[in-house]
Length: 260
Image 1 (cartoon, rainbow, N blue to C red):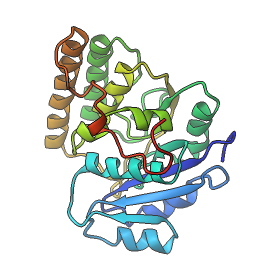
Image 2 (spheres, one colour; image 1 turned 45 degrees about the horizontal axis):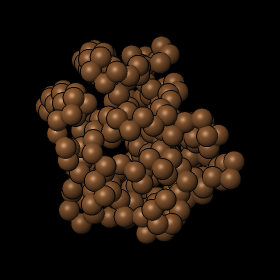
Image 3 (cartoon, rainbow, N blue to C red; image 1 turned 90 degrees about the vertical axis):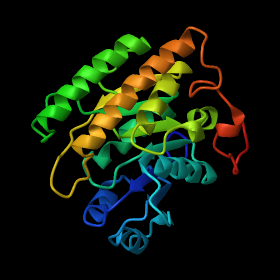
Image 4 (cartoon, helix red, strand yellow; image 1 turned 30 degrees about the vertical axis):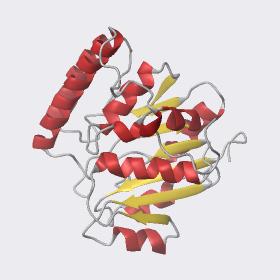
């Protein structure tokens, strides 16, 4: 626990057998109460490695996509009575030691959501981020800041922490099952005026680290642009029942504590 808050780390995993143990050992166990891994039908022994490490493991029998994996992750965190859920990618691309910093920013009551930015600081390119990813990140982020009326250093990091109130409030089940889920969720958080903070995080790109392909990056980018335009339409009063409308039937099922 941290400041009386129960902390659950969730690991959305796919083909992470080679990097999972290193990631697990870097997670600060002095503040983390539970760790949950959701394996999205990996062909390697990701689930077996997780179970040997004593990690609570959930396995999708069929590959359902990165967004669907996160939906399972956050439901599991709520079922474990999480006050704060932190998503850590098990490929060690992001620094797990920053879990404490992310959690404390929410446990203190200052923020509802915190993201770890790869852009803050000067380590992005030095960490190996491909040039095309860096510049597309910067362009998409500029466009999103204009369209969403926010001021973030980036929208595309996969290292994020959420207060329970955020997970209970958003219609996450309505979101994509694929990579654009991250961006939809962050836009929903902005739409609902949750307090959103950032910290700087070094990242490492290496052969064993997972990385979205160029073709999937293009699809993701188109999804981001679409998401921005849908948000603007919603702000103008159009699009009832869209991603930004809090529809109860699309919220996660709060089995443990019930709705607040």
